[in-house]
Length: 124
Image (cartoon, rainbow, N blue to C red; front, side, top):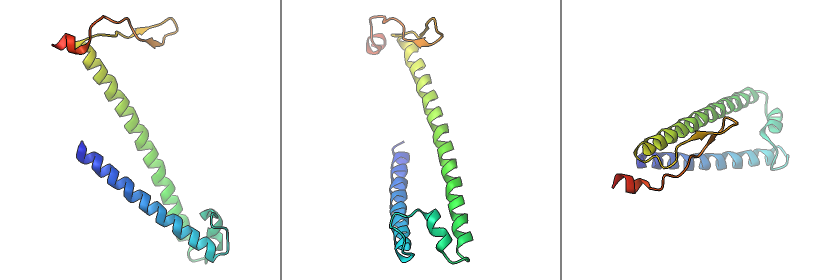
């Protein structure tokens, strides 16, 4: 787990570096094209030579597609983590059902009554 966390942190740092380099290059291009330094790439693309436009458009489409995939994976990971936490909670409660989940009149889950002992008392 520690190795995976370190790898994710390293990848995040690499992404931040690449993002800064892209933003710097975009600002430089905007200055060359005599646009504002914060001009979006979609405004700069039509000002580029015709041979470069399809390449830039393809790159932007690929980046957008990758971003959608990342968002989808992040949602999947969130759901898996949430389910893992639910299962872990059920596992812990099987040793010490301190709070039994109960449904209220509206069909929502509410915490049950305390049993008066904690996990370390039940296990010890």
